[in-house]
Image 1 (cartoon, rainbow, N blue to C red):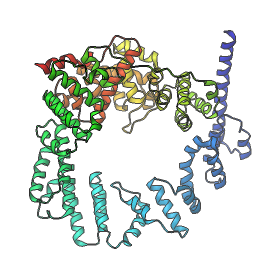
Image 2 (cartoon, rainbow, N blue to C red; image 1 turned 60 degrees about the horizontal axis):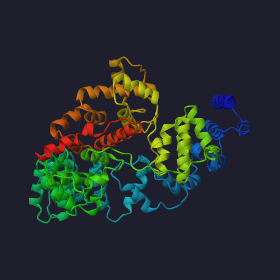
Image 3 (cartoon, helix red, strand yellow; image 1 turned 90 degrees about the vertical axis):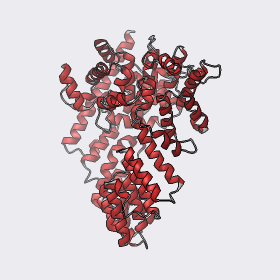
Image 4 (tube, helix red, strand yellow; image 1 turned 90 degrees about the horizontal axis):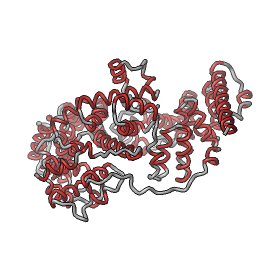
Length: 628
């Protein structure tokens, strides 16, 4: 034992020394003139690729193309090169290194870089492919200004560009890009088409304008614009949009069945999300083949809201087979049968569903009053971690992770582990868990497609911090873990597109208010990447929502979508909690709540806790109400 402890501390000391040495070398590169020869003398360093990246970045305007290419084409530099590439592209553009830009950027999908590629072709006397210009043009999103010369040249060579200008204006309409709509109008060659483009802009500003003297019911363009107008108006004021659509149809005898179905879809979904009774009419028209998942979801929600379980069965029987196999429809068809048949027959789909490790499986167990289960646990062969841990890419990932450079560690890890076979990905997950890198352990276990690796996919991440806050606030630990796994999958460096940060994805403004209210440590938003602070603030906010809504499902929805929205949805939709979940208008929040509930049950089972999701969803009460 003494030998192993000595060896352990020896390894830790070496790693600490190596990290300090690497940091010092990075500082030297940043602050002094390091020769290439001196840089190369460090080539035995584990993190040498990142020292090269730092040196090349420091000397960006002096290095040769051959030096940069040699660095980026060396296999062990693949992750470090990922960080260098964007800077190098900018440098090539600054140098106007046209042949190299052609070699480097020919396959790029980045619009800004693609237009620099076009420029390089032009400068070297090569034709710019019209098909590539057209593909870049045909988008509802605005493009960089330096793309305009290529668009202008392409348009002037087209005999009649007006149809594609109209097509792109429609794309901009659906992408809610009014600025682009106005910009495109200048390209029309025909005065008549320019007037139609101006009319499109007026309709974009005020959809009701579609029914005016400028509307021509025999024009295909007007039919397209009418659909766009209804789409835009439906989610603002669905009843007015419905009236508008009916006026359009009356004025357009030749409106195609397909266009009618499209408009009915816009109206039906928008109305269902506002619990308007007319929704059912439009949804029935919208999906003749009964294979549109969202349309059929809202038809189900309406039937559930009315406690019309015969209608649920009828809708289910009409469904395309692809939808009938979904967990959601198997569950609700089973519930509807149990209600209408006043028993759970031997062939009721709730029975096999209750043995599955998923949200609707746990709900089914609640209906049947049986124990929720993690399902049959497959045994996987043990892994030899020694071989995998010797891989330089994983050694670099570990070193970067342990010194706190999570972004580089993630890229190094992802580029290597993603290429492994399933057994090796399983081993990588175990390796990451041994480092305390819970995010990558959970992710790699999922990549391995070995879905019964419960301890890896659902680790007890930051257990001491979660235990402390759960006990202090009397919050169920399994719920905290459910929220954390859904929010960040245990990535303490996670940043959402909206700006939420850390393990529990806390917004900086929420963090500041919560910290002030409860006297918690918080200096600035960088603190939200610290697990202890993030968990403290996130759990206090979750507890505040629980106090406010007095129900964990409502509090979970509010954590994702905000309290004001949940207040509105409580007034609008049924009080039966599982039906209420199906009624959440935001797809993201609805799926979020289901995921958190499922993860909470998994963690409760993992921890050997006698807690069932049915304690929060009350399926027996729901069935009793339905049977009255």
